[in-house]
Length: 199
Length: 274
Image 1 (cartoon, chains in turn red, brown):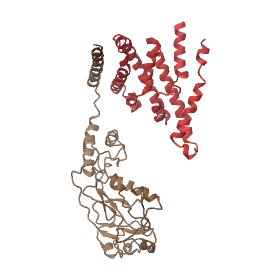
Image 2 (tube, one colour):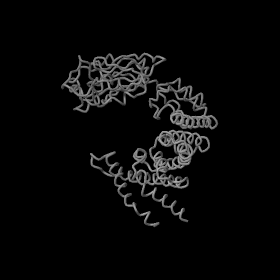
Image 3 (cartoon, chains in turn yellow, purple):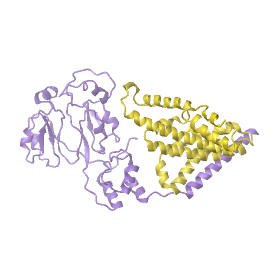
Image 4 (spheres, one colour):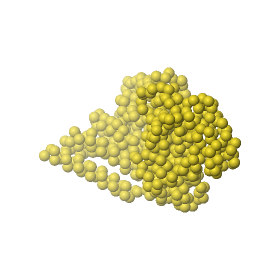
């Protein structure tokens, strides 16, 4: 029961408190780049979640059974980048073969994730936080869902921004970044809540 | 020793991943629709976007899905349209072979500048400052925005007017969209009569700005046996569907803005500037 509670805490805190986009500021470029339309934002969010889960499932064993075993911790970054990039490629090939409709839906977002820093951030942070395998997976799931949540919220906000008359100096990216900072501020309100609920 | 271990570990990981990728791409290879590949191969592959799609790949995909006309590829012209029609087994409407034409004859003899322009050497920039330095507001500014945009290097500046080499012109219409004065028109290549002016000012004003301007005297409209020329907004326009190239209007025009031309055929191999 205790371990189950820990998993819930990890999940909720990675969705709300330590949201990768809004409080750790990783993966900002897809957050700003593909949040113009809601369906695109959802596509990107789902792809990122999927890739985060698979990447964690592969990088965790590699860290513990190869890098730690041979004292090669300093190779962590480069090995993880290599693995994530090839995983995304393999995933794309497999999706194209077996789930063409999903492949078409995810479209250009899948290759974009190859170099998404949020994915690398999740895998490295899981190691740094000393999570075991299950906890790492739950944490990745939470981070992916958090990314999805941020994308959906922000795409909604952006559609509102498009329909408003903004003063000329703030038009475009200016207003977008200001809006992003407000969402980020709002998410700061979650800090401390999750721990208190399960305390 | 440690370096060796790191090297071997890295190599092993990279090798495994590489082999995995190779195996995946080999066993799970998805053959694209062979029709699409075939169509893609007969398209010119310059991704000019004249068909309205994002590139030749996009157009090929849309063609395979159906509902798209096969004669949209302007650089490829009739031969490509025919080939696509053959592959897809659909009827191809005859395609008009068009070339770009600069409707301006305001060379240094005919017109003059009313201002000195020292800014960025670009038609777009110059046209934003009171329509540019030229006396005629409809004249070619001569900074060569169209020449820079041309994918086949068919435009060069002669007497500060853009002139198009039809042996290289693909007919893609990129220059027509680029020109800030909108004086480049896409006209049929077979035509022999053109209006070399875009000035819609009244006759006197147009004449003051440029000796070669169309003054809207309507002589051409009256003389044309086929009713192919109409003068509206003080400017003659030719309806190329009705025009029979009889040249009656050319002899009648008092300012010489109607001209006889011939556009040589495009060379078969036009190299594309990437």
